[in-house]
Image (cartoon, rainbow, N blue to C red; front, side, top):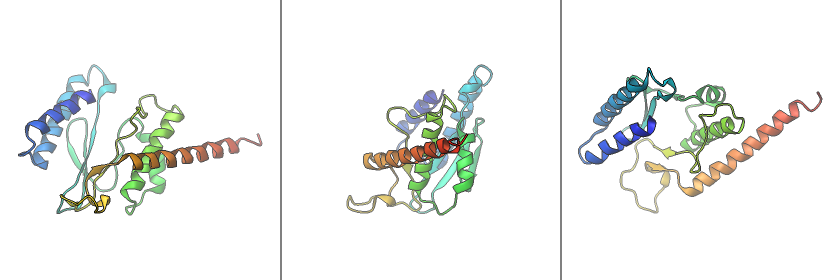
Amino acid sequence: NFELFRNHIAAYINRNQTKANVNEILLTLSSQTYALNERYRTRHSSAIFDILVGIGDQDKPATLTYLNSFGLLNPEAKYRLIGSGSRYAKTFLERIWNRDMTMAKVAEIGYFVIKYIEELKLDHTVGLDTRGPQIWFIPDHYAKNIAQNERKKDIVRQADNQEMNDFAERVKKRLDNYNKFIDGLFVDL
């Protein structure tokens, strides 16, 4: 269901690349989310999905907008958890979340939670495919045209291969530490 949604949105963006603005795209996301969820709501409740949209703007702070399965928009003030793994992520984020976290730190936490759920087999619908997670950096007041030698943190972009490797390495170390801690809890029993 989500792949069908993604294909509808990609086709819309390709058709309207030069003239579509953020509000029109959000309306399209809203109507497509509702239409596809409504089509499958009574047949396959596991196919129902909601959406998080990060929006970067040159002149404003970045925003996070949540679209529920009915396509209703709700701008978020801090963070939003979606999907079947959200109940596990909530445990971590409630303890460590703060507004001053960097985008890279939030991305690493998300990566960790997905790997944690996957490794512990807590939910079979959560896990990383061979490409890993999709991580996008959406800074406040981003620079539209930035020279190659300028700072990467100032542009809207997907994490590069080196960053993904760094995330994977740090997440592996955290999971190893977590597993050692859990194993240590039961040593004396």
